[in-house]
Image 1 (spheres, rainbow, N blue to C red):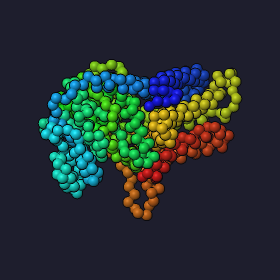
Image 2 (cartoon, rainbow, N blue to C red):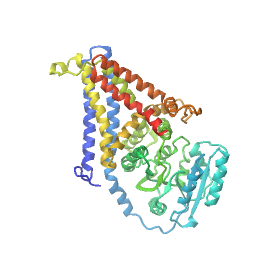
Image 3 (cartoon, one colour):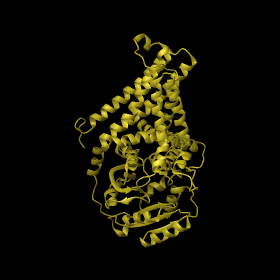
Image 4 (tube, rainbow, N blue to C red):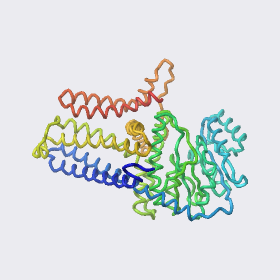
Length: 515
């Protein structure tokens, strides 16, 4: 896709990397400036906090921009591989697997019906429904639809290892050479899935192939959430695949069974796919990403569904950080490979914690600042005005953090509204993601629990307030500080904090509007 200014967007990638490097250097330089002019403990604390935020955000922002830059070259890379493929002389046996757990039987059946349309020799293709459902009524429905659609039905009496456990239980006794995994809600849109992808396995060292994942279109909220995946599969996954660190995303992919068995099956963690990808790399297997959509998942229309998903992701990512450091000495890849895994594990933690920490530092900045005035050179380097300097720098950082997703979403997804939604959703999810990380560190239950509204007399608003009380309390606290700052004639600081207050308030607003 061409752009009038950026052409094939290579220029955009160069500009993006340059901007983030300049911002990182500016952040570090400003931190140094704060230490130079610091005169008391309070200022040293602020300077240290600002320096820490600058280092962390600089590392992740530069890493993200480099991934964005590298993704430009993936088209040529995959085309070169494709040209070397030979026609398939035989058709290896494939198991098409759908793991389920208390899912909507009607949606599961729709998935099964669509998967039967796969274009592949029937004698080499077998279908399986792996049912971990604990609800007896749902289980009986799963048995019925599996039989109706000629899927072999398998059920476990326990959920040991969750999805990974169900898959490992199946893999231990399967006879097929390859396993293709689909989620219960993924509707096949291209029946050439197997015939397109299996030729890549002519490379005997290829462990798995991941294809692009996306969801069916719905409303603004759901389509904005889809952009989370969009950025990952458009930019991050291709860049990682260049370095053999493509992530198997749990479905819409194919795995060589012999390789899966060789590495000991799926590691039984909450996000088994990330752990499997890393372990496959440790065993020196190759991976591949094919940037093509073959199935569409169910759109996420509820905020509670999104929180549940993001909680699971960050719980698993936090577990992965420990797993990575435990096994990194066994890695034989480049330093870039390590950076890929490190940024993946810390990614959602960075987005969440950095927002909260920057907000807290902003509060300290506002209440050490003076109202906006015209400063001369002498005043700029005067410790008396350091708060104002911080406020200006922080305001610029906030504006840029807003503009980045909005501009990128406009360029690649042709929507400013969705860009704003992505920005707002990151604030709305900040505390949920952080709580998930804490739960993982303390080895608490990996599930997210809601304070259910069982009283018909209670309103939807009460439910929203109860389940976002932390975010709401934090937003209220910031609003109070904003009012206090404005009342003491610090209008600029008050407005700055008010913006933060509104951003965290989105958690309650999204919960109320989307449930």
